[in-house]
Image 1 (cartoon, rainbow, N blue to C red):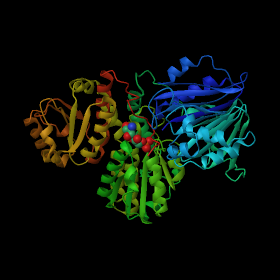
Image 2 (cartoon, protein in one colour):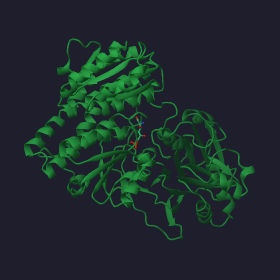
Image 3 (cartoon, rainbow, N blue to C red):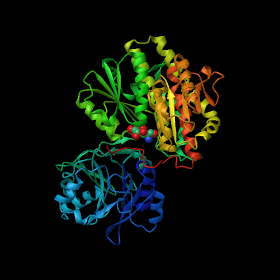
Image 4 (spheres, rainbow, N blue to C red):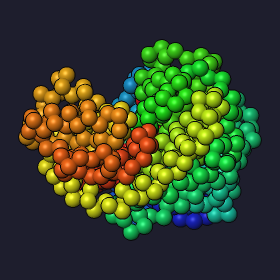
Length: 603
Ligand code: M6R
């Protein structure tokens, strides 16, 4: 789960590589490095270090040259140190790698290179193999011979000391996008790193080799046949406008939610009925399916859990939600009457991508809800609905989640309309309530100072439990993930009724409990569950739908009033803020929590 970049052209490479690496840093920030071909020394010089891109910038002031490759790392094989940082140079070959080479240990031995390697990484083996196969004549052949020995995933950018001003690239699963302009040619793991240079780009096909020169690309398949480039237009504003005055991207992205939810919803309504014609979605998937599998990871999977409640509750279509990493190992029951819905912000999560491919092999219809345009999951899926969240930079997902939920509301209304589970009036009422969400979220944001005040009591907590019922339980799974990933407080979400089946033993005076109460029909039961933990000494912070509040609840944040199934959005936004304030007040790096990367491209 690393980020790679390459440039060759008419400008100094260093600044372009550093800028691109900065925007790729969300893919990993254990180390950063670059290799630039030095025109006088006639070889590629490597500068790399453990740590972030800023550190690399400080170390690389003297670098000269207009062809180079760069890397930002999330460590998998080999510890976090300078030696294991990329690029790796072996002989006359320098590479950067994203992916995992699974058979690297056996290759080290069978290829007789074990004692010549300088790092513990799987990646250096690829450099050694390419160098071994390169006779000075045919670089493409050397690359193909080397990668045909690899099992696993890879996106490689390669420079040969003997071939100036040229960068080669090859990939299997891990993505590479390419573009060019009058100033040169560029490649990267994703378009956010290079999209500012041109709106015309292409995705390098798997199992092909790209030769990138100052003036463009030659692409050949592994049999040496030229491949026509399939150019695409970037129809997405990828401009990173910085933090817009906020101290962290996460706060900025939380604040953007009313606008991006509105955009995602309103652009897909025709006479108040959801319309996916601009997404080119084949509507038959909504009527031909007799069951649905939602497949995703982390926050995206939590959005799927809400989708399940909505679709089963309103359309009576059975929905199973699967963790993508377990999906194909559990013999899921899918066939041609299954609609598999993959949810992913990045569109690059490898487990979700592999699950999607598996579902297709089983004959399932497929639909993906994706944020990043032309990402691997989007390209692999038969149907795509893009969320309109815009670039999400903070590792903790916020606006991607609420726009994923917005799409699930639209899908539910569309299915209900097409299958007759709601009549016209029912669909219109549903959509009218959906349209109130941005206002409700704005109301929460306007009162964020109250949440900040409440969050102070969490600063010293080591553990917390979150309790809720109905829709509130999957909402709390998301709230809990948010809190633990950025504040490092151990947090677990429970369906309130389940807590007394064991976990209540952990409640003490020092264990704050966060209770969510938005479901009208469950209010008295939830109230009893709050009392149960209070009797065991827990301090309870409650997020309660305003009209369900009673004077018995103190230390609470009142949520705006929407119908039960829509409350999850303002509720989770309020808890995104809670997590954010705890993390920021603890002085943590909110946008880049330890051990994490935004895009998880390893299984
Ligand atoms: O890009 P994806 O939506 O596929 O990513 C899935 C998860 O890795 C992601 O949602 C993760 O759980 C977030 N960092 C949580 O905030």
